[in-house]
Length: 237
Image (tube, rainbow, N blue to C red; front, side, top):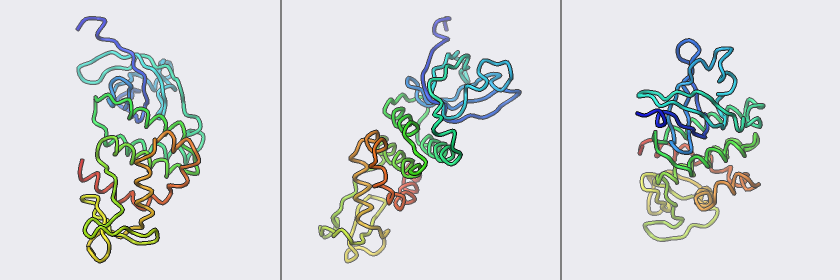
């Protein structure tokens, strides 16, 4: 490996970190060019190290890296955005880091995806304390949709074809994302039609538009569907 190919710059988000050794950190990084990968920040916790105080979780920046056979080394880090709107409130910070870690579990390492980067960045940029949970749930749904794991759910009984009324309960088969009326099936999960409509609406809208507007409060009912979706997705991946 020649000298020029050993070094590179990368802009991205620090989404997790762990202490190792005597003052070193290992950082989980989501970069614009390399996607998700782990890097080592040697001496980052030591008082005189140039990285000290800069490589915090939930930070956007640009780093200077050295390639290594195992973990690449982070040599310098220029902070672009600290997301102070998250960090000055404990509850918001807990919500943000929890959902980012949940989202990260589904992302393959070393795969570049600018749409995923944008999802993570917009979530962190626009999250507000009073709708942090709803914003996080919508982040996960849009991410799963991007990864090809979620389809639209029909709002007619797939067996008899009957269209449901707005106040009607329906039965959801989460294995194939199909719905039934109570006359055609009695073995599946009972759920409100309105929740399915909200779910389909989330798949239709752009994440940036939803989270950056007052629309987010319209989707609070989606939390009723999240445990079901999460269990199904975790089984699949």
